[in-house]
Length: 209
Image 1 (cartoon, rainbow, N blue to C red):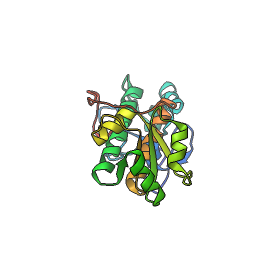
Image 2 (cartoon, rainbow, N blue to C red):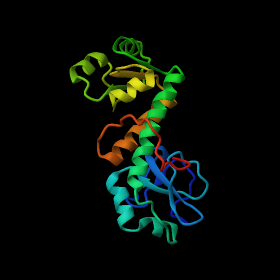
Image 3 (tube, rainbow, N blue to C red):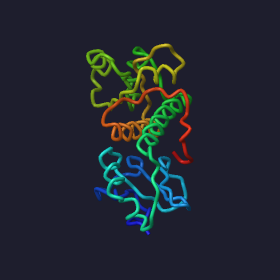
């Protein structure tokens, strides 16, 4: 059995022992044949093994055989576990953005974004990588408390069917929170790089991630 029961609102990292909300962490399960399987969606059956979404934490878990200790059995790890997770999180960021657009909870373009912000309809601001800090300040104006995420301009343009996009605003709610959580997990594993476009889904993609 693992250290933590999957009940309540928090999970404990098996490396740092720090508790956090599930959507901000990385969940893994052990397959019947002993393979460690990432479960970013948190839906695969079995008791979860939880890690803080940080590159150094994941590397520590791998090098110190922490997965096997938590599972109390021998386990196997994919050779490219970090890459699998980074690509899966990148897809989840893009999917979250696309879902918000299709739900009518995201708009694109400086003028429309500024209108939503001025009307108090913004819950998250997304800026394309390389965007002007001065222009972002003008966009936010008196709403500088709004969270800001940075994605590639290509990802924004693809989500909205445009050749070019720099700013997107999401309405407050579950979709904005989901995008922020996926963005934070991605940054934790890449140590600050920006999610970019992924035209082709990876052949290493597994159920649940």
